[in-house]
Image (tube, rainbow, N blue to C red; front, side):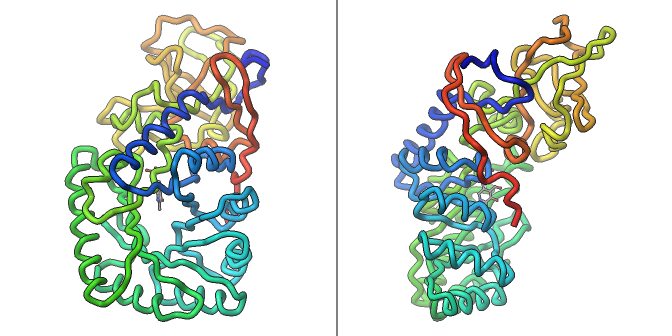
Length: 369
Ligand SMILES: Cc1ncc(COP(=O)(O)O)c(C=O)c1O
């Protein structure tokens, strides 16, 4: 089957590009003695997780118990839920996952920790515990090294739990492209202070997990970190290219669309709108500064973008293009933010050149619980 045989909109994955992305980061991690645990929220496909593991990853990260269930059922053997798992229903499901595979969980509250300990004892399983710390993104995570030590001690003495280490997520690097190195240094200082205090408290810290796609290749500069969880790197997207984290040729995922209407000059409409691309802007709100408005870049005509959208219509901004777009013409779009786009599709189509090699159901899509 050829790409030209596919209906639109279709999510295409260029397998050569994806494999290049996977191996480049795996090689970097190996070179710097870092363990890699990719966040699979980007692709949500067990077959891709297996490829990342074959390339050297020690396991995977997920955000949701539902994603963990899908990955465990597909034979992934070491899963980290990098998110607080709160509520009996979720914790009981997670215990069933832990009966199949080794499970680590983020914790940033005594309530969450104690409940996990109770669940583990009731269900006869073990959860590995990573204390989440806020390193400046101001999302979840305990605020200080002292608070991390308190929680770690509690984890270390709770039956059913095994204290494994700490976790930070430098999501604010997406907003601070000039400050990546500073953010990495600040994070390293926080991690080192915490590791020192934990050592003094007699705690054994096996893992200090960090890393995002923008900072992936400077992870060795973050003192104390020995694991990274970059996820977007597997496909990259218009945001990573706009921020200089990747180039556009490294964007493995595109959406194949058809021009369905071109009623007058300057008005070109494709068959994909916000239900395909999501409404995400270029990450970090830096679009205006970079002159990168819109919802995606047209690969064949980079001067054109998806300018605005309704649910099923994508209105191209073709003001800078001399190309005459015709009804029936097929284009590929590099989305602003690939992760929510993947979540909107049932399957992705892996291609090499113009040939279809594999069709993967996106088994982890829509697993919001
Ligand atoms: C906790 C956590 N770890 C890792 C990642 C992966 O980061 P990136 O999207 O920069 O690859 C994310 C992304 O949302 C995350 O929330």
